[in-house]
Image (cartoon, rainbow, N blue to C red; front, side, top):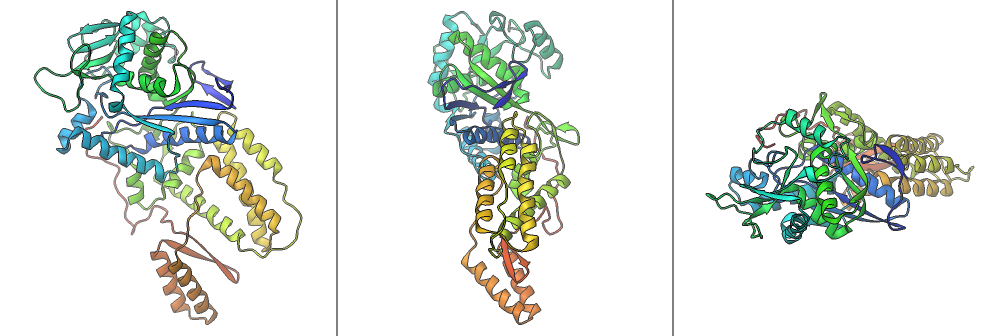
Length: 491
């Protein structure tokens, strides 16, 4: 596999630390609100990377964290904890908020056919590991104390900013220019960050723990370092996230991890570009975001969004529109119809389809820095072969089996085609409709088609037979759509 490495700013041949095994860490959600589809694009791309590694024969230990404490509303280590702020607004406990939005997130990734992590770890379950890591940094002279917490002195880490491709001075200047809030004047450097924050003296937090420095809670950055090294070791293969994490979160992870261990933290850094709306980054602060639930309310199949993501490169921005999503939903539907129609074709001996070149091109594409767009073209070539068999209305068993085998391999990476069972009552309605058509009772035939649709399926007539496929709305729900605006002040 060839993979772009943000750390070296170039494409490299992937070589794991341990032969046949890959350790992969992905920054998970901060569970104070629903994930938007810009967030979900990152998780889909990480899933594609994981599936490609498995396709290549690697065993993958995939660790993802749940940030359920410590992520403040400002990158300057100021403001409220996003979890506690959401809890106050919704009149729930912080624990209830984090559980509720964790459950919603897990539902979303299941709908998008994103494989579950090998290990899903919560920040609040790993506080002791974070305290131990801060103590290691303290012993090595990287920390200092100010009124609101224990901070990491970034000037003491030799290569600070290397992930962002910037020097220490350049990164400090950049953060100062882009700051949305005033930085704490007690900090030695603008880039210094909190390792442990003290609880306010005049207010008891819902989430706080005792520590050698006083009662408080961990900084956001220390969480990922502590949990990734706990489950994958102090040096592991791949760290994933969105490009917005490069200059601050992941830069700080490297500084605190390598500062504590004295060894290289991660070999390959994998970052996914932004999802845009009308040319602007999709974000909650701009209130221009969609959640997966928004798309479902508008009648879209979540897997049509997954297909849209696959048809672009993870290092390219995507400009999202509902019209584009409709096209991908139709494509998904057409693929489904073609495959199911192939299965009812009369069997006849014929020349063997040569699929070897297609499979070879598919494998080359996915291993060329995850070129899923080119890989998807190879799937469409297979669908073209299927449609040629449908046109002549016959196929050999060998060709059909080989096509199914290749599609299964491709879908082990793409994850857009899902098997689904058809209920007995729908099968019975279809048989009754076939009988009505034989009798030329078109009124009953149309009524039975309507009932099949109400059950969540469509029936497609093919010569003297039919196929049943999952019903898709193509973004139409009684002609209504929802507005993009979200009434929220959350960052």
